[in-house]
Each structure stands twice: as structure tokens, then as C-alpha cells.
Image (cartoon, rainbow, N blue to C red; front, side):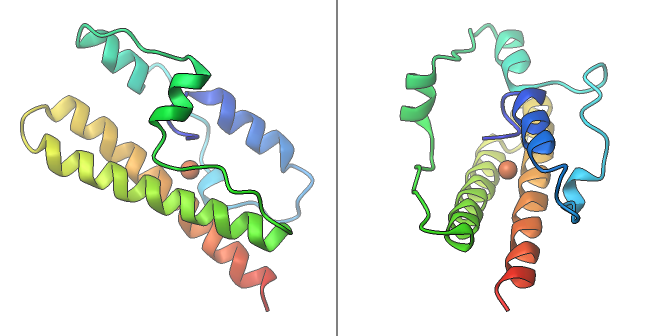
Length: 131
Ligand SMILES: [Fe+2]
């Protein structure tokens, strides 16, 4: 999930798409100002936990699964499904947190907003390509 692992995934994604004439709207904002933002791994450490970056563990805990697409439109549709699952997951976490942990809730709400932007971008891209 792009918002959970800091800048590397987003940076890679941006670099891969610089050749595109169209840039998703959620990419128009600057990359994270890490001095003023807290990341999930940082928050886990603040709460006394130890972030686990093992790819096997991450894959097992993921709420989404990899589904290969037959063509570009299929791949974008599958990516949109994954973004919507991320939105639903973050929304559920926000509800679960309630007022119990406002710092974590703000972090998750920020991730939720970013994923909603990604889903909007993919929906708009599909609308442009699937005509
Ligand atoms: Fe995303």
C-alpha cells in the first residue's frame, strides 16, 4: 500500500509515470514533508511496538491481493479495486479508533484521504481510457 511505507513507493510510482502527459491530481501536491508528518511505522514505535517490514508478513496481512490484469484497462481496474479496499479498511480503522487515540486517528484519516485521491485518479483515468 503506497501510503504506508513512506516515500519510496510513491517516488517510484512517480518516476515510472513521468513520461505520461497526464498526471493524476493526487500527485500534484509535494511529496511528504517528513518533518511535520508522522508515518505508521513511527507511530507503532511511539506506542511501544516494533514495525515489521518483512515482505512475507506484509503480504499475509494485506487486505488486498495481487490480481494480474490482461491488459492496461484490467490492470487499472484491479488497482482501483485495491484502492477502494484500502479506503474501506482505513475508514473502518478510523471508526474503531473513535476518540481513543486521536493521534493515530489523524494519521489514519490522512492515509484515508490519500487513498481516496488515488481511487479518484484511477476512476478518472479509466473514464479517459475506456471510451
Ligand atoms: Fe493508494
